[in-house]
Image (cartoon, rainbow over all chains, first blue to last red; front, side, top):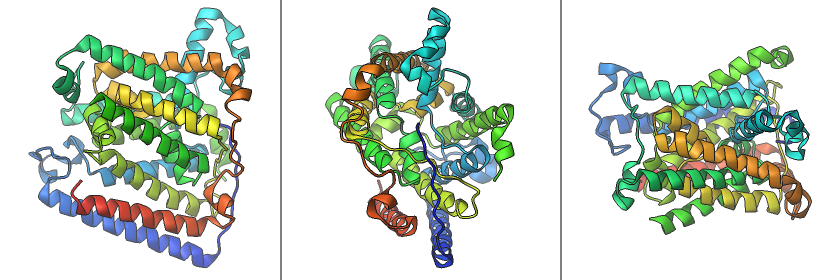
Length: 221
Length: 185
């Protein structure tokens, strides 16, 4: 993404208010998650494993609030240590550029789009490699890893139809790939990293992602 | 600050991977790498995705703006336009619902063994990004610059400091999460 940076220094009073807000939120989230741990009804999944027995790493699901806080903190780390907002979709464009380079030779890099998004192993590209590995380890440690062609919800509507599901996933992927680059970001780059910086285009993009998605989902189901 | 760390390329690639690892781990633990959870959100039946995103925005927003005071974090803002953000965003939404994953959760789904993501969605997305690179020269002047937004951030648009906006966004997010909790969604 083409980025500019800007910095505004707030006064001391505003800082104090912000810190108090943060403490209040953490307090509230902690309260909610304790209440949910007690009732165990958060995800609708049976909570046969309790925290004390097997530890949090073996749990299949964490509270969405703890996951959200974790991702928020991860964005702090990315900004401080790498001076970068977390994003994902650039990596797909770089992958496609690198494949084109193998097939057609180095002149691919002179294409207008690849001059802006150089097809190379970048920070974002490595982030996606790590993402796959992180999801794999999370699924393995909780016994949630399973090779699955057809998701249960799809099966309940369209039956066990691996070919049809593959066709939908592939064509949906193509449309998503075009849309993510057209909008210059995805649910991570716009939906989290852009919105949290209060970027106008990111809030609009995130709303469009969901509006488009909700309409089509209701047509499909 | 920390420019020395930022300029070391091998270290940065390693950091990118480590951050990605934690990101993928969290997405999988949140359940949002599952097709059923994402489609449940788009069908407005399962609000897990919204809870994760809004909590991440809240935590990230307050932290990043506080970290920017001593200069530990530098904001990276960008502009947009109707032609890019709205049209592209709606195309994204269509693909999002047909595939049932977004780009990040697609990668996570591949890692947890969802073969429709690994063998269907991932190559589809790579090809889609390639198609976009091919049509980009035709779009750049005619479509992408259509209705450019004149301000990059909401505080700039309103002509205020970020702090009142942060307070308002915090309040709105807490109210939405509160309603979701009270209605048992």
